[in-house]
Image 1 (cartoon, protein in one colour):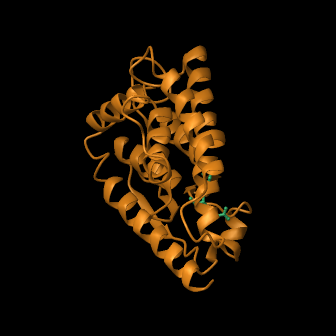
Image 2: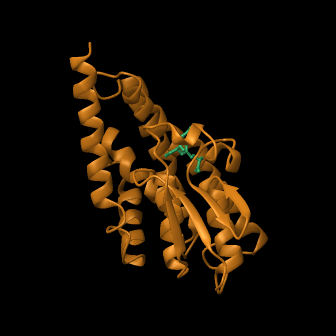
Length: 225
Ligand SMILES: N[C@@H](CCC(=O)N[C@@H](CS)C(=O)NCC(=O)O)C(=O)O
């Protein structure tokens, strides 16, 4: 493969990790370019010229720019996978996969973002119950999706499983899964881990560091009060 794939990166970002996992599954080499968000590099040129929405992940494939992790994952599989199992071409399977991807982006990830921004914007403790309840409400839906199938789109792992699982891990910082209520989610997470041998390696330590970093921000916010 002669194309150079450039990925604008932030290690703690779950959507970036989904892209990295899918690229690794596809055997793609990425040139990683870190974006210093604490230094607001994402809000300045040249990054803003590449992606006016100023988000990571952003991928550049031989001059073609695409951002929004779910769109990137779909593009990478469509372009580079040897078969369509990670993002089925069958119309109804693809529609279901898209539905689960949009569910991740609009429901799971937005709740994570909401809690994290609560801390970034000065929270002196973990987010209050009115931010936690919506996470448990969305876990119920995810658990129901997984009641009849091993993966989110039936029998096989797709990009929807990867994106959603990568979001659930840091969501657990705020709302741990409950053994009695979220059995399907827990079993699915184990299945995703078993199916992708490097899944834990690419997630566990960084989520731990993310949690410690958040706790550090809470401590600083308390001192600045
Ligand atoms: N739905 C987007 C979310 C991307 C996103 O919000 N990324 C964060 C980092 S985790 C970011 O770039 N934030 C900077 C900003 O929104 O200005 C995706 O899946 O790519």
